[in-house]
Amino acid sequence: MVRGLLLPLLLTAAGASGAAGLLADGNTVAAAAVLLAFVAFATVNSPLVFPAHLGAKEARRRSAADGRPVIYWRPGCHYCRRLRFRLGRDARHAHWVDIWRDPAAAAAVRAVADGNETVPTVVLPDGRARVNPDAEWVRGLL
Image (tube, rainbow, N blue to C red; front, top):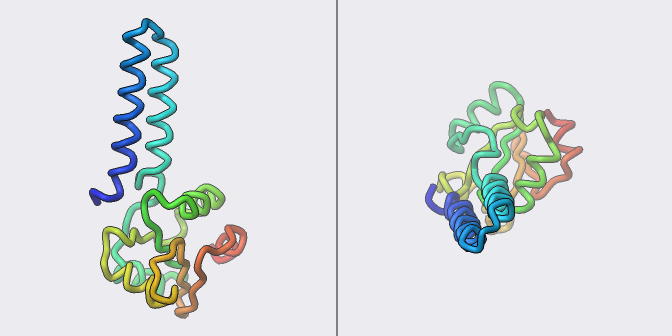
């Protein structure tokens, strides 16, 4: 979990540092804008924008029961974030698994991505998988 929060924490610290410098110069509005921008960017790059984390085993069990796909992702991944935002509200209908929080999830991704931890990786209940799929294809599954 620490790896997933490292980038957001660094972004927040950088924003606070920049805002403090602007405040010291008397630029209150600019300081607030910089801090807000950095906090927004940190939020977008944090695990907070993704649905609740499930373990790989639990996600596979639920997927088999309800037919929804499992989407493996990791914090800070541009492609994961892009898929999440393009799916919009439909994203909550998939089972999201953070590969940095679950070693079994990372192993499952390596098994279908030629030994690489390439995310997002979508695994269907029947075992078929697609690495970095198009959002419209995933939306059709949901």
